[in-house]
Image (cartoon, rainbow, N blue to C red; front, side, top):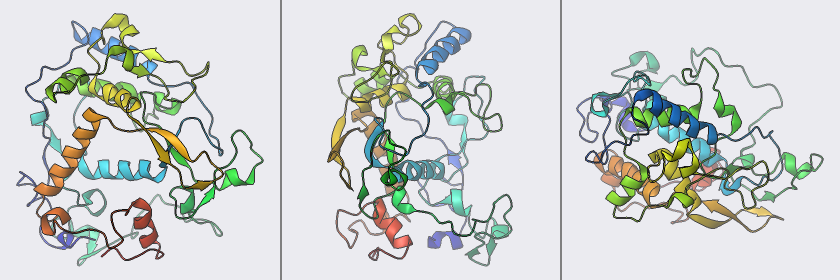
Length: 359
């Protein structure tokens, strides 16, 4: 645990914030907000049409190789979500009215400091601590004890060891039951269960795609093409913005829909930024080596492109350089003792008592 969790309420020294919580920042504030219809009803209807195209038909879970897999181990998906929850939490904004980003409060500190896990520190939330020791696992309800003989097989999520690639569409193959799982490819297609989230999670709308699209419109975000031009980049053409799975050989159940054909062309040269970033990744693939035996060697893997990659990188670097408790501020010349090849698997191995020291 960072030492900052045992001192002042965290966030006091974070970038441009005098509070443990802060305002959301805004990129490209001079760009015009993207609009997708003449009035609110038309905007929502057109975004709903796009959201519907962005959710794939149901495809049951499988243990073996999958055409939608990337070359990135599955744990990176959960790690990325964990980082996202450390950066932002907005429980109060609405999807039913226009929102001013400058008026919204981010209920996370503007720093990568694990406040989503540790809270705001013992001085500010003493009920979570015993002195300066975090009460991990104490007085928590709603969790069942793990059954006897069960354990977490981390090798299914990250390449701690080298395992067989498995065999596609073979439920009897024993390698499929213990193979390393890979994250799905970044593309403009969400899995079917996200079409209708449980009511205790979200409602009105319950579609995750529509929630993302409506939120970006309500917040007045510019289009992906406008952001690309602001970065002095040539935007993707409408033909390059494909809604569908980024599989190598799309089948009959993998429709590939051009953005300009949806909602009578309202999205032509006017793609919502979130959708644009996902479609851009499809145009930025890399052949990623996969750490398995008996596999294809490399897998074509979409990666964030020049717009999406720059936005994510600038946010992360801005937070780390703006936080005077971060490693980049405290020791800018620091490098892992294991060298530049340090990856997520090294963190997991260290946590399990198997890896090299971190410093």
